[in-house]
Length: 394
Image (cartoon, rainbow, N blue to C red):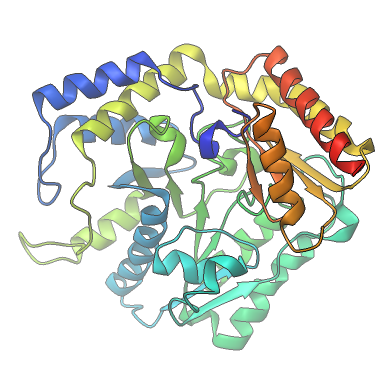
């Protein structure tokens, strides 16, 4: 499994520790209403997650998926501004080629055309900065030197619609579903500066990049920029149970909760299965695995070997770009008869060769589990070389 399912099975498949924890939880307490009360494991998991999140993001809101975490983050941003008397901040900014899930808010934020084509813009008031996939950055390993100036697009949008009307900027620290697009050096730092100057919240969508994928707990730590809000899902439970979460600062939590009525609901949002006992049990079991097996440290240590192998493929005819950072990489193929045709062909041929991975357009995307040993990486690289070489001769 060269893509850890969908970048979520960080500890490998069918972990007995997680299965046992879920079984025991369902045998003890299978459900409790998530509104106005919670169960102990929800508090325990929130506390443990806060031990990994960057900066002072120490308050956790649970949901059921990455898509839900993005829409929840949008509503948290709006609620925070309204509680501060800035209810006019209703606009959002994202990027071209971004992916922020499949709920209507996330579709509006996303910048991938096929996620939007059938459904329209999703919601009004969302603006998109240019993407950072520059031709001069082809075959650059890690963060490219060029492209930081593209962050000035945010300032252009502020000048167009008024920075005082923008609630939040959503970015993936490294774009994942597009095909591993690491941020140019200085790009995220400049976004942080502009957001601070304009009073805009900076949101990192770390559904893919979080929990070790970048070689650090979160991309925020890898790239040295702290967001105001952070979304997560996927590897938090090793994908054994559905769970998403949003992390925010204490002062944001206090602002929202203190604005509510006495003994009333402060934040009118949540899901039936938020902080589900079984999901929290899976999350706690995964936290134990992260600690005992040092998975995040393993990912950081294996990154160079993994990227060495991926970038060794650049001599194969038909490869037009390779991008990679941490334990995520993409190989982009020259387009075929139709957009995405070569990517689909490669994905199928690799699957037939017993190698599972994700393809987006004409890029095949790698993100193996963190338990992978060097011989597993070698197998991934060798099978990919064999299949892509055969395709190049057709």
